[in-house]
Length: 104
Image (cartoon, rainbow, N blue to C red; front, side):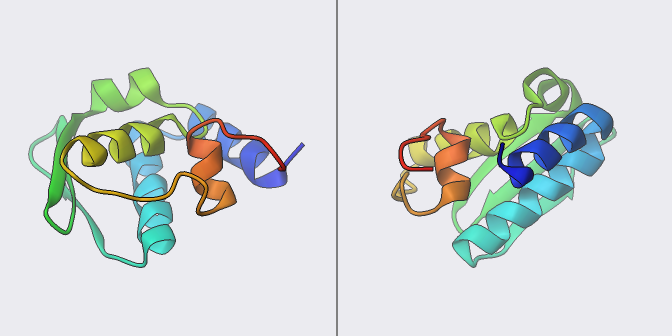
């Protein structure tokens, strides 16, 4: 088993929504070498933005899809809908987000 996936699963299970979304934002920032901003809109909602792409997520939504790479995938898919293009095979991290396990 991949250690990173195991750790991510443990974190998803044991962290609250706000703490876990911060982990996801850090991972996305490192992966794309761009600033991904996380701004709290109110007690329940967060604005997540990278370049000209942005989404709003509630704590409830985060908790509902919280899994090792589920939130990462959700954010990336929402950014794709807005025109963000990237190679889903660019790294092991992105492959994990999209369930691509060939050659891993």
